[in-house]
Length: 483
Image 1 (cartoon, rainbow, N blue to C red):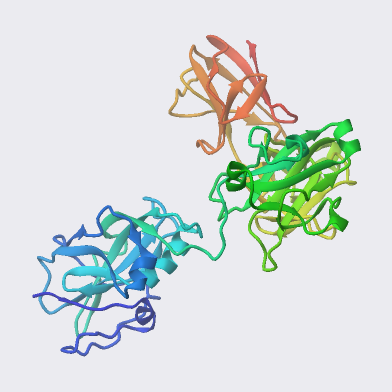
Image 2: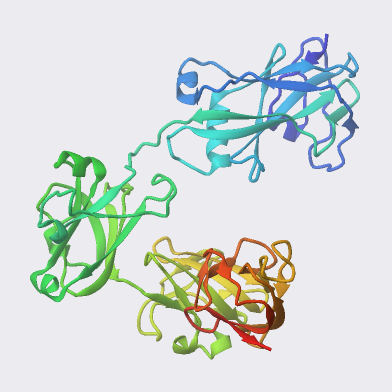
């Protein structure tokens, strides 16, 4: 009979010792050696015993039980004197990106795991604190050892028993709802579901992104009267009564930013300026039970001053938005730049806090790049985050182009990377524009208004054309001049 060992990742990191009383194995080399000895086991097979039912980790923990995951069906072809163990690996997707290792314990031929271990790995691998059950992807590394040797079965790229398992983790010590709404002047001071303004977060779980926003165009009359606003969760809107998030005290009701508290209907923040405003609230309370909020004029575009435009916001490339929270667009960058909320330096300026993070601190540094050139930029002014993708190629693709839908027809950039041209033999059909010969960044819609991830664009017709793609200003456009 094959022998199976209990296994701990900690023990593996320090050197393994068998938990089998009949054997005394020496510590094998640590994992730092990338060239682990390999043992082939073509007949090793595992089966999923977790089933399709959701694994309720808190319930299992409450019973001091173990979670059964897989069963070893066959070890044929392996020597009898080896002791075997498995390391589990959990990820949020079948591609096993950001996969995290976890320890397992053998119960006869069954691979089990401690639910406390799975709880910790679940949050790390899926990067979430949402209490809802989610599908996890699990697979196993297999190892064998005896008194003198230690092996990775099948090699470093070999995994066994790939499976899915639905898991429900512990709920965090706070509750947020899926939807929140703005009430006040738009609802005539009442909790009115028909008139309330729905707020939105980034689209992921509100536990993982509890920042909700909406916009409202405050009229001059509403501003003169004092535009009132507060925030309620969906449960309050449905019931007509309940939790209301409103200013912590009347003294600060007109502050553009501050803290709401758990309140009741009748307490409102007040805005005395007309025009479109962006309302933001973090629906996860801080340690004092307060909810951070802000109300600011909605920013229509972000500007990108830097060396490429002599630090002039007015002549820089603009990022656009359809929600006044997330912004995107092309930017030609030389060494560094900043985002500004207006075509000048007199409003909100967004600088570098750390990679991927922005700050509005006036002393913030410039956002650096290591390679000069054209970038596709994204910024979230509520979460104060950004990302930059270097664009090295732009081209036409589609059945109207020489390469069809299989290969881009390259365009050539100008010195400032904002005008791209080529002479192209076009056919009938449709086309799109994409960057970096991939589909992460592509544009469609129409020639006069190129839209990120827009639909296919009809061909200008058969013939040879001078194609000119203009990224210098919004909207982005493309023209075809017949040759």
